[in-house]
Length: 152
Image 1 (cartoon, rainbow, N blue to C red):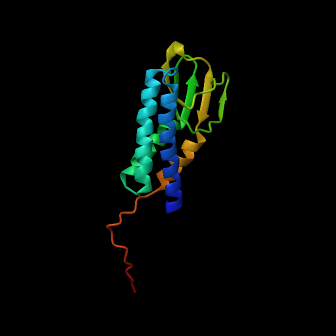
Image 2: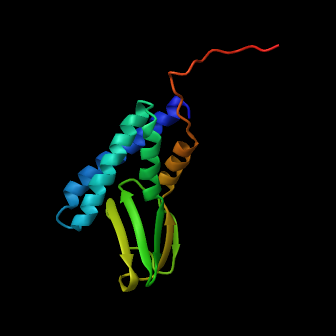
Image 3: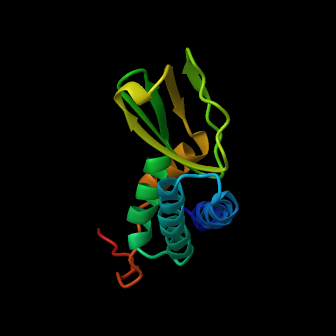
């Protein structure tokens, strides 16, 4: 991944980390404590991943993959399961018989059984693009020699 793309993803991750913190503070009275905890935890990992990605650290790739993979799927299958995590920046096209109600800037949802209504399948496109870019990135170890060997 070239430096501009890597730093763009880093900025995105740092921003969604900050958005998660601010949104958690604003929504603390209306959101469930678990949603606040998930937002703060994943927001912190996103912030750290973005900072490490900016610095081109090797662990940044793993952390970024985790943060983005958690945000990509958005699903609800009536009577079975509902899952979704959002940190404040999402473009989520979806199909469904019962569309999800408007989500707050941060949200996390994991429900099973009779608590789940309707059918909904969506993808957070911003997280998916970041996930693909980070998945394609191979960390270049600066300690390796960069000399070229000529063969005849």
